[in-house]
Image (cartoon, rainbow, N blue to C red):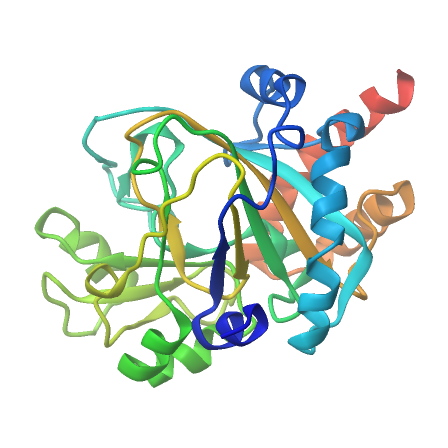
Length: 306
């Protein structure tokens, strides 16, 4: 089965040893180990010279793959960042008093629980024409800090309603009801019959919907590809995923193949355009875009002065 068919059917593909050691160089690793993070653990604004070899390899595979999938991506520009995980064996922390909008439990180490990515959807609202590439840069063990994925065909088979709801979507979390979090779910979904073990989608974009109950146990149907430095994991943006564990430190470069008509938010014109649009957004989107703008404006001004 070729890569495009695999991606279409399952939502992801792993290519072993796609990058050689010259692509994953010491300078890039050293820079990422000391770089500052945004609020969601993402490292932005990676200097282009560090990314040259990786960019060249990405450009040699993603445009043709997107064409085979009939995805309308901007084949001449990709968005790069890095994601850092800190080793932690601590148990998830219960956050009380409960907040309607925030998770009742927080996982330590920068680990993200089941979700569809948020900021990419807040910014562009198109996860159909979007591919995500993960490249481990620093990863001591192939058995630890991998990405857990619920394949597209599994979701379609076990929960057709969920499959329809997440096509092209982002900004969603997926959580299982536990004894200590039952109260939070009853607050979030009043009037519904809720019991421990139920799964829910938490909608963080649509102001008219808190989310909905699932008919699938995500943990029971996950797959966890084992990644090593130099491997390439390609995933559609509307595939449910999470960080599997924080058993070790890990830094991965992420490359996003973005929609063809995506706004150029990396330019001053794009930043100003988004700032002007901000007051007219829905409340959930506006709350998160505000955090992004508060980070981006000072950072852009700082870079402009240097």
